[in-house]
Image (cartoon, rainbow, N blue to C red; front, side, top):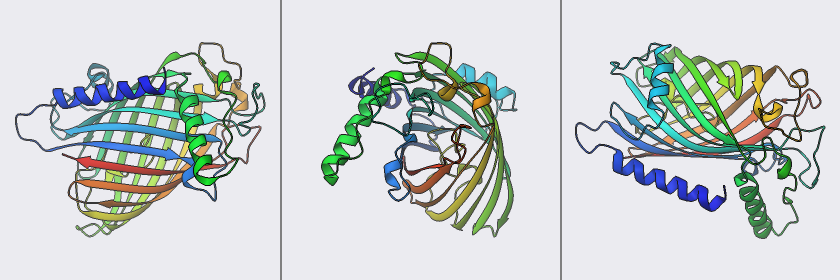
Length: 344
């Protein structure tokens, strides 16, 4: 799949979304989220490796039907958490996204057997969340394709643009994408369950709150995770809508349109069972790592600023993650995120 064909696919789904979303009944909240992760956004910490870029579009609704391609699968998964068909207080969404990972040495054309492999994923995911004032549970089903050429084309174009703007010889064009996980394309899938609980808050108007969460992921990424988050400021959105890491496996769902601002910080620990982006899947890959070569306990977190208005919300954050391979145990990596929500 080329970049041009990916753009056409996204435009096609946007058109379907507008056509299929209902124009009748009481409209509560609908919107689009645009999420962008890039290590170039943190120049002092950027080392142009590991998780280098992520991009996603999320379309969300509250209490009304829209385009929902994986509806049946998410309903079945949601029943395990008590998200039933007759539930009223739920919201749901679908997302189109892509994530890219690279080794440290981008100039090497051959396979790098002592560094993480190139890997990429293009995906479609559906999510459903049931929430009340103190608890939220979520079910998500993701179907994607590993190993397409979209990541190579987009990264080369971005690096070329950056060199032209800065007048620098770096970053170099990545030469090793032909050795990525499942090169040529392979279907994959993930099911994720999450639970979040509001532990504490100060004042009804919302000056600060503290939330804890846990999650289980099964599929191309299989892990268990626990997390804690704190927000402080003029908070008017739901506790479960913290905009942390939406491209990968982050926030439950975007918040309803509110005028607010807050700073936030979060920490998350993952107990890793399997990661196809490091270990490969069924198709042959030139570079993979065995189960005893990956870190079983991985930490990540972020600090951010969120500013919301009546129609839109924007978030800026700096994210970090611990090393994922035992042969590079101290190799943390960092990236920046810009997330924008528009409600209509």
